[in-house]
Amino acid sequence: MVWIEPNIGSIGSPCLFFNGALHSIAYFQDRNFILSFVGKFILSFDVNDEIFRSIMLPQNYLDDIRVRLERLAVFNGSLAFFVFGKNPDGDREICYIWVMREYGVVESWTKIIVPVELVMSFFGCNDSGELLIDTYDRGLLSYDAESLDENKLGIQSPDWLSYTADPMQSLVLLD
Image 1 (cartoon, one colour):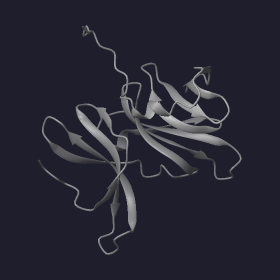
Image 2 (image 1 turned 180 degrees about the vertical axis):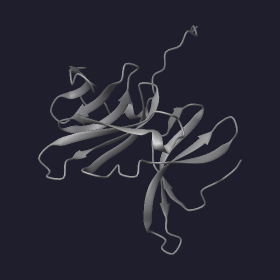
Image 3 (image 1 turned 90 degrees about the horizontal axis):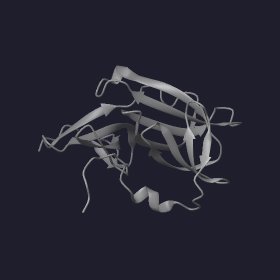
Image 4 (image 1 turned 120 degrees about the vertical axis):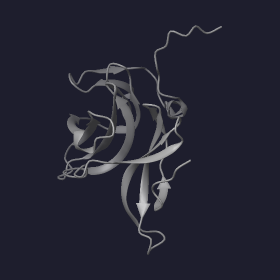
């Protein structure tokens, strides 16, 4: 096993399995101060090579947003970093979807801006790119980031979703 980032302060959860590796948001710290976190990055662990790698987040992902919730997910087949919060004026909620168009290439991060309302939790995306979000007033929704259509799934308090793995289609038959 190879370790490439010695200054990790903590590793966030949940982990995302994508492209043969586990990914998590990690925090690095200043060696001079025990509780001083300097920044964030994506820590990946390749399960085949047993090698840790770091992927830098977009440099300007905090611009124009007061962050409330961050999470990694697969969006339309690509690694994505979701940032939920309010615009700087605080008058509307937004979601920045940072999509890594070419895996491992930091320069390929692309930002998509999606208006959202009253998001309490984000559970990931389905295969068609719809966001699964829990709202304060409408329960669990499937939300299309392009058309902005929402589908109420009729599930209140879906906390158990945070303990499930990302869905994946398979042709494997179960006994």
